[in-house]
Length: 450
Image: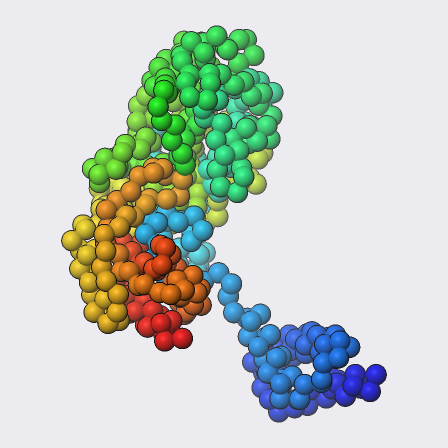
C-alpha cells in the first residue's frame, strides 16, 4: 500500500513543466486521459511488485502514449514485393489526375448532386454514366462502393425471391471469406447450381430454366484457375440462351479490365467491352483492380435495368462519395483519351520494360554497396490473372535471418514491404515508384546497420 501512495496524482503531474508543454500541444483533455491511463498501468505494475517509476519516466510514458494516439494508422508504404495489385497494400495506386481531382472536389463545395444548367437538384451518377457508356459501349452505368455491393444490389433489385442459375465452377470465394453464394443469399435470390466443378454445358443451363427463373449469373474465376478436363459455355452462348428464354444474363467480371492484357505478355483477361458486346444485360466489376482507380463497384448495361437498380432503396446505402466519383472520373478519362498505359500506375508497372527494371535494380546495388541483381517474377495480384507472372529483375540481399531483416524494413519511415525468398530478402523495382528510390535505399541501409 505504501508503494501505491508514492504514485503521483493527475493534478501533481499537470503542474510539471514538461506536461504543460504536452497540454499546449495535444490539449488538456487528451493529456489528462493519457496520464490517467499511464497511472492505471503503473498501479497494476506496482501491485505486481514493480517499483514506482520516477517522474521523468512517467512523463516519458505519457508522451509516448499521446504521440501514438496522434500518429495516423493508415500510412503510405513502399511496395517492393512485385505484386502490382497488392490487396493488403491498398490495391491500385491512383493517378496524379485522380489525386488532383479528389483535392479539387473534396476541398470545396461542388456540383455532386446539382445540375448547373437547370439550377436544381441533379444525380451524382450523371458524372459517370455517359463516360462509362462511351468507353464500354454500354447503354448506361452506375457506381457503388465496391463490386460485392454491385452484385448484391443488382441481384436484390432484379432477382429477389426468384431463381438465379450459376455454374458450380463459378461459386467462388474471394478475400476475407466472402462467397458468391452468400451474396446471392443476402439478395433474396434463389440459388440454382448447374454443372460440375470442372465442366458445365449450355444444356445444363437450359434444363434448369423454368417459369421461376429470372436470370443466369456468371462469375469470373478471378483468383484461381481450373485446368485439365474443363469446359464452360461462352458468354455469347449464355446470352443467346437467356434472351431466347426471356431471362437476364448478369456477368460478374470482378477485375474489370478495359485493356487487352495479351499485349503485355499475359493471358487474356475478359474485358468489360467484350461482355457488353456478347450481350450481357448487366455487367459488374471493380474500380480498384485492373481498371486502376479508386475502390468502387461499377454496374453497366441495359438502360432500363440500370435505372431500376438505381431506384432501389439499397442504392442509397451503397452509393459512393464525392471523392471516389472524382477519382473514378479522372481515371476513366485516361481510357477515353487512349492514355491509360502511360498514365495509370498499374498499367505503367505491367508494361514496364525489363531493361529498365534491371537498370534500376543495378542502381540500387550501387546505392547501398551490397547485394546482387537476380532474375525473378512479378505478379498482377488483386484476384486478377491467377498464376500469371511477368519477368523482372530483383535486388537480392542475403541475410542470416531474412525474416528479421524484413521486419526491420517494415519499421522504417516509410515502411518497406519486401519479399523473403529462402535465405534472402528481395526487392522488385516494378512496384516501387522512381520517386521512392531514395527512401528505399536509405531504409535498407539503416536496417542493415541494426
